[in-house]
Amino acid sequence: MARIPLWFGKSESLNCLEGIDKFEISAAEGQVEVCYAAKVVNQSIFLPYRVYIDDYVLAQGDSYYNLKPQSIRYYQSKGDLPNPLPKYSLNGMQIVWGNSLWIAIILFIVYCVFGNEGDENKKPLEEEFNEEK
Image (cartoon, rainbow, N blue to C red; front, side):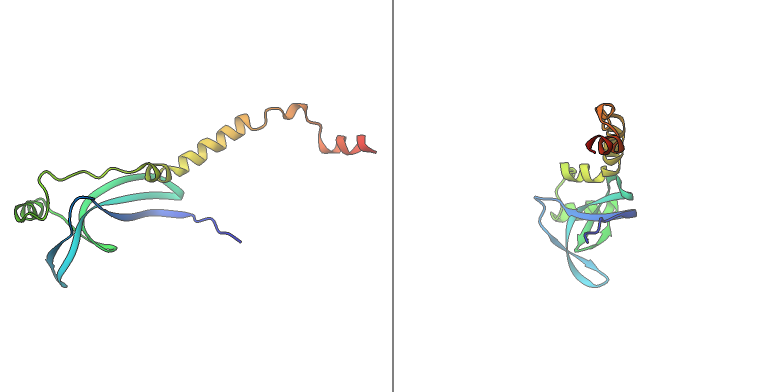
């Protein structure tokens, strides 16, 4: 049986910005290769109801390092990050999926309001059954 995924709370995804090459930084683990990424957040109650770009970070796989303004200036002066920094744009699917709870509610309301039109001409099943005898 297929399961419908349902979520609660906040989930994050990291999306490296195109056009900016990965570069190495010094971290507690040693030299780490990172990319400049947008941290995209989905908030959900059964389905996502809000999607937004929370912050820009340095991402390494599923983990990330927060950026302070002085860190951004430092990496820009080294040539690792461009000046000015590009902005990340949510694509259409991210926006639709990130607001799918609202879309589901609207579709449910539309169905409740308009889905029963034409039912007044239908006979109850009991009457149809009695007419066939």
